[in-house]
Amino acid sequence: MVELRQLQYFLSVAERLSITEAARDLQMAQPALSQAITKMERGLGAALFDRSHRRLRLTPAGSSLVPEARELLARAKVLQATVGRGGPERTYLRIGCIASAVSGLLPRVLPPFLAAHPQTVPVVREMGQRAQAGALRDGAIDVGICRVFDGGADLDAVRLTDEPLHCLLPARHRLADRTTVDLGDLAGDDVVCFPRDLAPVAHDTIISACVRAGFSPRITQEAGNDQSISGIVACGLAVAIVPESTTRLRIDGVVHRPLTDPLAVTPLSVILSATAPSAIGTAFRDAVRAAA
Image (cartoon, one colour):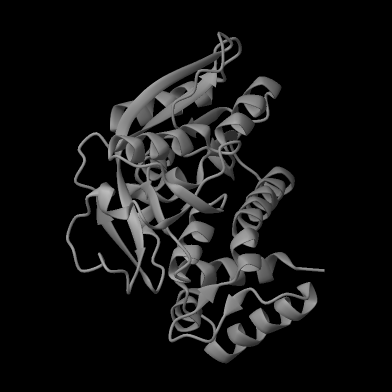
């Protein structure tokens, strides 16, 4: 049985890819944190980190655990607040968010919104745009952040911005020393991409950018989150074309470069229920639109 405390330790290490840095942030001894992670791996029967390099790397099992751990800890936070809160009534803001926006847009817009709405308890769930649409229709979330979405008259989508695309390259890639990359120069490379059923807009945007550059990408790997895509690139198995926000992840063995094509962008949108929008979801949508 994995404990919440172990998940917190795991996420701290996964986000920093360093036992030393995570131990410092958690204010605990480095050997104790290392032992806790090893104990968790034994309990799960799988290695979560590859320790064979100078800097830690997530294994495929570790990469897949990151979004699940975030969601479990978020739900635990809601449960604790529900049974133990006192004082003024709190309002829950349930946000469905694609992975790149969790590391990109959300850290910029959520803290000031919470400062202006101190009784709001945020619950962030990483999910694809189709899952967001279903969750909005079911009343399971208040607002979604995704790419472009045309989900019908019962959902209200507002386009926020266009985010430039970058390429992720293995550190020893032949183009790694360039400051920018012409997408056409990647025509002969294997590519790792988001599955279309999970992220249709991101997938199609990447395909279109490659076709505009004169080639059809050779997609040999698929991964459903930014961590996994970056890990595959770090292994030297493929290159990736990703939103700029994905490059905020620090992965040893990966370099990122902007593309020279000014049209290589991917949209970012916020969606609400058009038939029964929540007041807190509407307020957050308006704040995000103003900040974007």
